[in-house]
Length: 144
Image 1: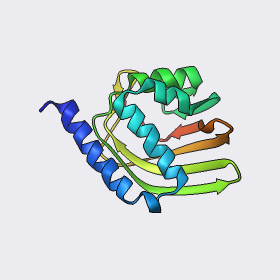
Image 2 (image 1 turned 30 degrees about the vertical axis):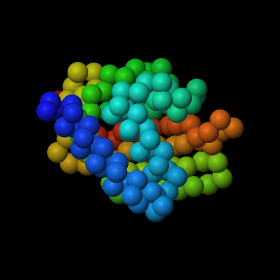
Image 3 (image 1 turned 180 degrees about the horizontal axis):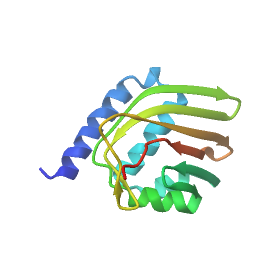
């Protein structure tokens, strides 16, 4: 079995555990799981449908708009993902999700460290066509 199939199988098991406790999951956790599943599956259409037109993000290597984030996500090749420590705040039609992620990935050809969980923060906005990802902060430091 190749690495990709093993990684996808591990993520499928992880999602299965999450789905088993779906009744306990907040809407914010569900949205993050949906986004990570789309990234793991390489489902660019699903990713594009979730990212708002005015999206903004900040990563270790700088800020991105919607187009830049989509390009980044299309270029990711995460081998293993582990999400934990969700903190979700819901206010009206806005959800703020802080979570930790352990992921093996690269940005701009630079491999990010994957030894310890790093914090992420996402903001989701409820629109007439569903929840849209409007902002994201990736707080994982890059190695020199």
